[in-house]
Image (tube, rainbow, N blue to C red; front, side):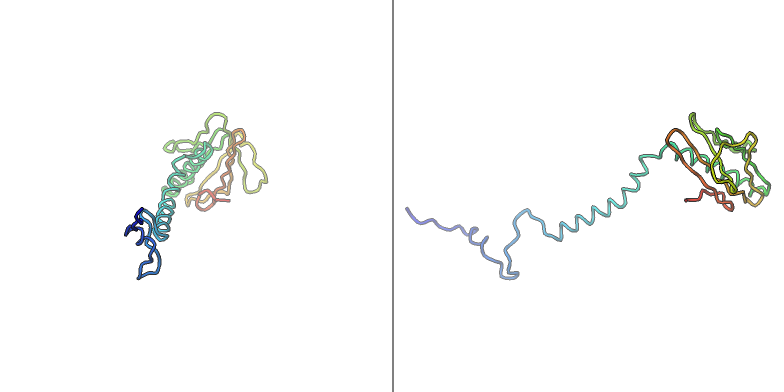
Length: 169
């Protein structure tokens, strides 16, 4: 049997390249730099898209109702400031009703109840029969907190007396 001749490619795979001192890269492989760069690009894209995806799943019903209540309060305050006149909101167990008809009321859906806590009170309670909340002509109001409840879900809103905005507690 004649001796087997070595193929030129077999020898070149085993010989180190003279410039780097390491074997040539395998065909189809990725370098560490390429892998890290791909991971970095994916991380940046995730950082950009995840907040938008989280918002797209929507809010809970309590958060939606709280947004409606806060928007009504802001509209009444804006009206008081715009016209320089005091404005009032009737506080009912079923929602908030502004005294002026141009601002839509914040009615709670079935099963939801509203509770109120004034500055001097330590607990939430049902609103009285004729209970209201007012903004003066400068838009300043009495500090107030509202709680929206339905079954086990509960959302509390505390309002800043100077801005009428919801305070994050």
